Length: 314
Image 1 (cartoon, rainbow, N blue to C red):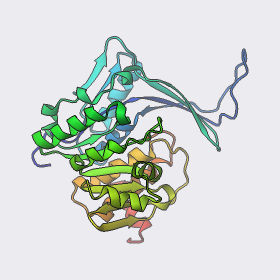
Image 2 (image 1 turned 45 degrees about the horizontal axis):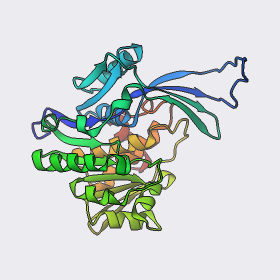
Image 3 (image 1 turned 120 degrees about the vertical axis):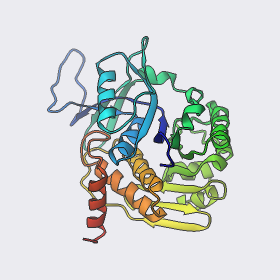
C-alpha cells in the first residue's frame, strides 16, 4: 500500500496463552486433578491484532520481545505462518516469554499471568524511522497518567514525521482513573477504538453514542464496540452502525482485538465505514467460535463469504 514496506506496524505485548477449559474448582492443597483439555496459543492483544491482519492478507510487522525458549520459538512460527514480518521481534537473553494461564468454565474465567518480556514494554521503544516504512500503525498499551506524556509525544512525532495513519485501542483502565487528558491524544488519531464501557468512563457521558459524538469532535473516526449489539462509528456528524453476527461462542479471548483487525483491514482496503464495521463484527464473531484468541479468525475469503451469507447476499 502506497509502496510501503509494510501495511501495518504494531508494537506491543505478545505472550503464550495456556487455556484450561471446564475448571469448576481448583485442587485442594496436596491434591491433583485432571482436565480433559489444555491448549497452548499465542496471546497478547497487540499480537492477536497482528495475526489477524496478517491472516486477512495484509503484510504487518510486529515489534516486541520474546524469550529464548520454546514459547518464543512457537510465537515466531505462528507469526510467519500468518504473513507477519518478525524482523523487529527481539529475543531477550535475560527474560522468558510471558505466559498467561486461563481457567474457564461456563460462568467465568480466571487468569494467572507471568509478564516476562512484556514487562519491558514502553512506547519509547518504537523507532519512528521504522514507522516511516509502514502505511499504518496500530497503537495499544495506554495506561493513563502513568505513560500519558510518552504517548502524547510519540503520537505527535508519528503525525509530524511520517505519513502513516494511526489507530489506537485505549484498553481497559484497571486503575479506575480514566484520565481526562486522553483528549489531548485524539487529534493525532485516525481511528479510535473503545468498547462501550470504556467510552462512557472516558467521556463522563451517559451513553456510548454521546461519547462517540464527543470524541469525534477531536479525532478522525471513532469506533465503539458494543458486544452483542454490534458496533458503531462516528465521523464528523455522521453515524454508522452494523449489527452483530450471532454465533455459538466457545472462547471470547481476543474478540475485541479481532474486531480491530477486521476493521483496519477494511479501512486500509478503502472500504466504506459501514463495511469496515461489518468486517470487524465478522472477525470478532468468528474468533470466538474456537479456543484461543486467533484460532477461529478467518482468512480474507472466509470473512467475505461469512458476511455475504449472513447479510443474505448469496
